[in-house]
Length: 301
Image (tube, rainbow, N blue to C red):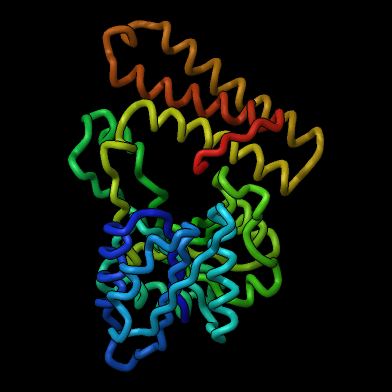
């Protein structure tokens, strides 16, 4: 199997991730061949030095440069490399994630237990340092949390295991969305519609590092806007037509109206935390409406 990491100018975060991958633990009777594939999306090859540190260690380490800017371009390069190596399974993890000691073991076990084509692991925030109370209490960075074996209709590449057959049938990630984000949502939504089985595995835990550059109101609102845009774009890509556009427009307007009305009602004016959460909802609604009109936000430019 292959573990694929797309990275861009995050040497320290990448080093910590690769150290965690090198220490993955498996059951005594389970000794899979692991190919770790790092795709550097920096044409200058800024991650080369970090990757050289792991050559000769446990597992097989591969370093590639994808000069075309874009997350889907980097991930597609990783998929092509994994398939060329004959890997039957492809796991994805981000360079700001820290997997638990038995992360891969749990993903593989869940795949076998539930005969899944795709296994979504659990991601939990790890704040450095701890942010304002409203961010933690509001669950801003919490991801879906289900029971192991629950069927899903979507997944994300921050912590996922995929049968390579899925890529053989569906192709790769949408490269026209290079710097916009959301290509994993589109790909896995297509996979679910094509009949591939996606299940959740709570034991396959990764922690996502959240620093002050993201744990703040401005970033959170920008992300809410982008998430809303992505939701509209994915829905339109799957079901183009006026019915989908009408549904997205109605949802976006409803969220904006609800958030706007509540911003004007007491005790909102005296509750800054509540105001921030409602502003986030307003941005999500605005994003859904804007995406429905074809607006794109290049979050990763």
